[in-house]
Length: 439
Image (cartoon, rainbow, N blue to C red; front, side, top):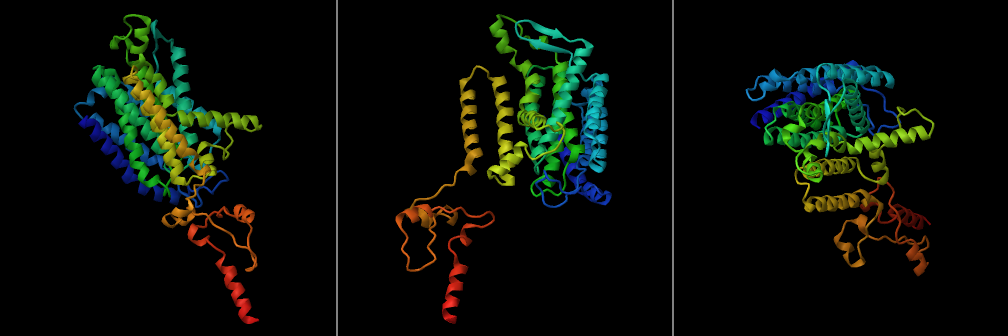
């Protein structure tokens, strides 16, 4: 564990220290696109943050190669080299897109090629565990197609969710943390060395995201761009493929006893197939909804719009930071809830806790729909925005009727006006006094 923590710290430190110079380079290179209609930031912000993240990945792999307990990962497996090859290719494509805005179909082809490069070097899905049946070996073409599909889906899901400051990096960091705990349990708890590469990939991914987040939180000083979002999506997919394709389910000795017992015992093996999708369940849902929405409107599935989930949170009334925290909450709930259920699937307390937290999340999600008002006796103890306000008629001698008071009791405050400046029409009253003195 100390070696993993050292790798995490080195990766995060390198990424953090390089992000500042990369920002200056992006400004000098002109990688500051104009603000588009779908963007939520107000000032042009440099991209190319993926450059620092890629060098953080290289630093993490280099340090792990020189550590005694992690050196065996590079000696017994070719997966770190496969990851580095695919990551370098997808990173170059992302850098070109951040600078020159290449076509979406070209990016899709590059993603498939990067996945194919990893498959050619051994990073592929070899079998699928099925409860009651056992391990089903996949042919070369089946494993290749399944691997490429998982990589492309994960990359585009992460890329689609990269719409708010710190959103993609934070969500992927949460996903990587959950996956690290799962992979470490398989490696340390079941003493299966084949799970070590996935554990290493997950901890390096955490370091990449943690090192970049301080520069990317709202208001962001630099964006990761496609060079960063596609890179972390590929590393996340590679972690899942590694532990699914290389860990022999028979080594866990789970397919024993009755079919029901084998099904419950097989959950630790099925989680690698589900965890990559559950930890990015929100980005994947956003991806599917975007494709359906754009196709329904007669647009290209790759056409950009402002209909993503984070855009809808802003439309509901959440602030930028609150929308990001809500997305963090749901990602953590899904990822760690799935992880907890895989460890103790027979415990009903886990299900009850997940349901309770989901209810809390829904309340927080819909909170801007409601404008709470304090009762009359408590108005002196709450901020002005929670007090009921009355609008007096223009004529001083006019006495408002109860119906008029009821209708004008709640008047919405315009956006950008706080409670202290919206209590009464003081400028109008001042003008009337001036008019009276002049007459």
